[in-house]
Length: 108
Image (tube, rainbow, N blue to C red; front, top):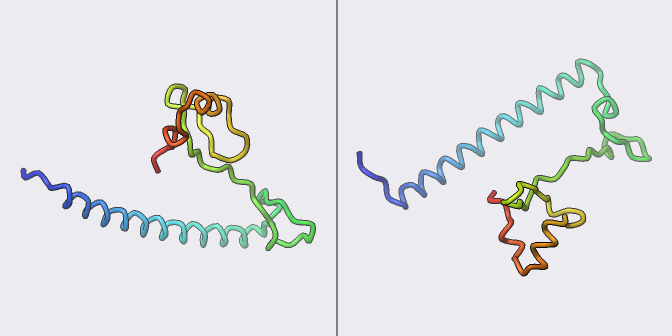
């Protein structure tokens, strides 16, 4: 069995990443269509789905609060922080000790 070179593996990675993104987009589109169908079928409103209505009361202005994905992780404790809102104590302590924020970034 021949070992593939770094460049060959990189090319395969790029091709596979494109396939993953295509599959994800197709699945999301199917999910959205199925969800819209169910909403119509059951006559659900944005309020039924947990959306907060604006003062205008239009679905166009409805919002959903979705937690942000973690951006930073404390490798010792597993604690995470999204990078939004106040910095957690473990993050502040690390910065005070001279550590760089980049050290805690979660690989995407």
